[in-house]
Length: 147
Image 1 (cartoon, helix red, strand yellow):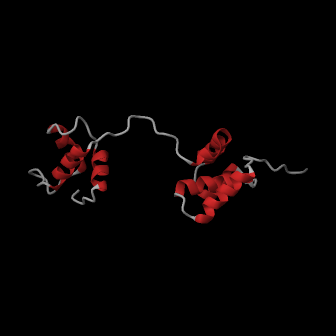
Image 2: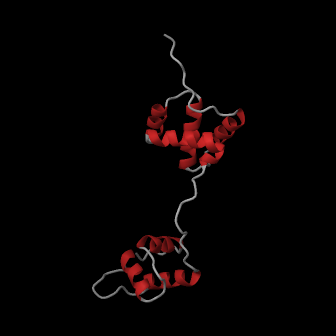
Image 3: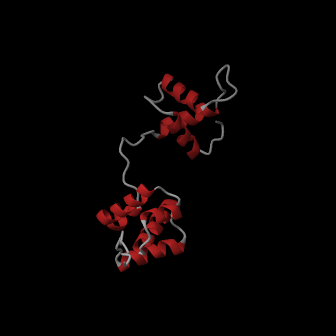
């Protein structure tokens, strides 16, 4: 009995060359590198399971890459836009967050926590709402190490 080599992905020569150039340059993000490698391996006849094991990702992730490539071509290398409203924190609010983080911590606390900062910012009316994660992102961008 002859074993059939299943083709999970059939890359065009141009796509194959592009993916190989991404990998050889080594300038891609880890995410893009894995997707490019996965598509090339699928094109070479590797199974979804083998690619998943090689790249340390879930079988379903590799199947999603394959399906996305079939629908969108090389656009599958990029993440799809995220749902939800983007965070809108203006410069004035960012300055208030940084200033508050650099101020004395409230009584009973050795230093500001991200949750404490978020709660205080809303309490003071500087922002309508903000999560501790958003506070963290603002402070990361200001190189503040107070929290």
